[in-house]
Image 1 (cartoon, rainbow over the protein chains, first blue to last red):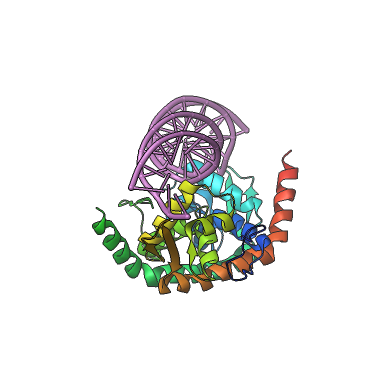
Image 2: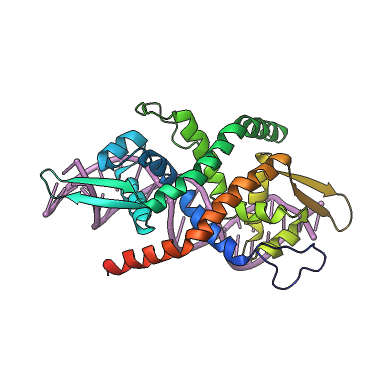
Length: 130
Length: 130
DNA sequence: CGGCATCCCACGGGATACTG
DNA sequence: CAGTATCCCGTGGGATGCCG
């Protein structure tokens, strides 16, 4: 965030406050426990509710509902109800949702590539102050 | 970080569970309330504790400490103590921390570009259900 | 099948006060 | 200045049960 008042000693800092709040807002969605998993899973095509539930594995019904609602609210997925019996509901990524795939995958790649380094860093840190 | 779902009974899935947990683990760090803000702020060079606190704006002392400890633990920032009076502590991104900057910025760009679309999607969604 | 509704606990995180 | 220690509340999120 930009120092609105007291930043005399520091070099000029040019990232806009607007960026920060936007990034923060999106990242809090991205960073929640399940959203990314669901997005990456839906990247392979539309899926039904319980199908997603099984594939994600470990998510409660409640949280999957909330996660999907959140993604739907943000315009990242669509929810299609088939009024059959038993009912069937499909979830699918929107164009917006698909466009999010790339940056998320990049971050994922970074995470995957640097995981060993991070893990050793953690172990080292934990051992020094066990 | 939390152990996430170290679910042994999780059903097999096309994409490796290892990837998911790794990504999840990193993203939970990335996605927490302050880490990214601090990282982007430190991208411009080393900063002192209260300097960061002022620049971030709105973060409590406690949370800044916890956030910096977490980043340090993951090997993303270094903590340098100058045993002067009054004490001075500098925080600086490591190479690993700096390497995270790019993917985060990409996600940030995505967020910034699509923010209006997301906001209208939210308003629309909220209006349809009272 | 695909959800709400409810209960309930754990944890994130703010406010405040104290220390080296 | 740069923390640590407490307190305390809001929310994230699991478990369970009911309903169209």
